[in-house]
Image 1 (cartoon, helix red, strand yellow):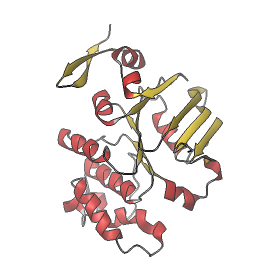
Image 2 (cartoon, helix red, strand yellow; image 1 turned 45 degrees about the horizontal axis):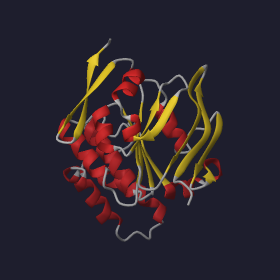
Image 3 (cartoon, one colour; image 1 turned 120 degrees about the vertical axis):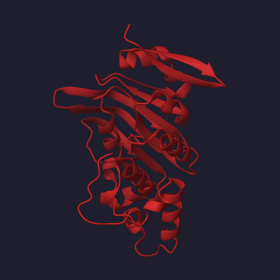
Image 4 (tube, one colour; image 1 turned 180 degrees about the horizontal axis):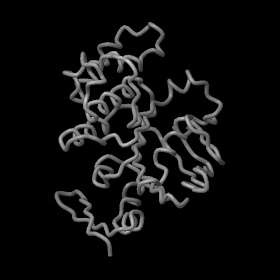
Length: 252
């Protein structure tokens, strides 16, 4: 069975900078991947390429065994959803109507659309926002509505750029708790918080921002020595109640 999405010798550049070189990894159904790296490492660029929004500079991305450039836009909308942390809300729309935009691909044959949208809003603590104009929401509220919109799109693959950005501690925990058990979904999320990644991910992709990368299970990649090298600062780990908790010990 083909992977949900995979990269073969992928190269991504911005001007003279090479974010990733010869990146090859496969994401299988039900896995949750965290993409980690310092600021400017190319995490967002990679997610855009995986979504088919940005062209690769070299190499190949395959979605369900087919080159991503060969997919029609409407067919892509059935296979993957993308959440960024930049939203354009040019006119008034309620949060509910914004979520329902993800259901347009059903072309009117969507009797359960509003019910599913409201259930997803409630799951992410947005039920009270349903009738609010999205332009009046805080950044944290708007980010959760964006996540709900992607969930409502009902795609097997969901790509999330900093899903817990702008969230207070309670909502950071809530977002991760709601995302992790989603049935029949494969998730790839860029993150800066190592502890959030450890709580969320089955696998991780580490990007240096200088071309180097490392991919593997969370146990293989979320290790203090690798994270210290990745972020150029000493990161240590303590274990409590069966969990590994990372903390920044500071520059050596």
